[in-house]
Length: 134
Image 1 (cartoon, rainbow, N blue to C red):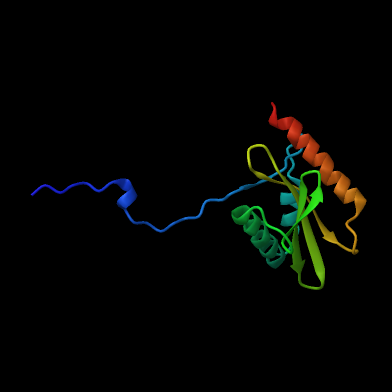
Image 2: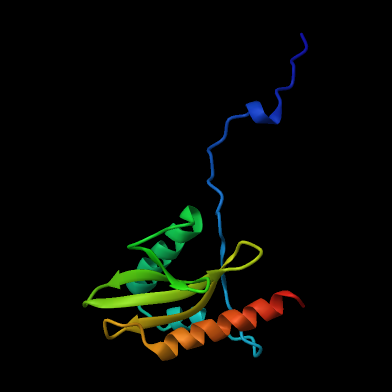
């Protein structure tokens, strides 16, 4: 008796959801990755919480409040509540290759987002956009 081979689509395997927008770290001209370095300086639990929120955005893009908020001109922030009444923000944008580029991270100390941090995230976004053409 000859067995017919089943088509690959008929083979059952656990479904693995694909990332809609995989996260990458912005890299400076010197090769530094500011968000990765910022995260390395945090304790394990803070990194885990921030990572969970980034993962939520990766798999669920577009995501709105309270996890993600648009900051204008294509810039967004991932918002994470940490222990000790602290609030982490990771600024990002989605590039032309549909990747979430992590530009800058902060622990907010006031209600308003500091303008210097927004300007740095915007500058990193511009640098990354220019580098895509190379």
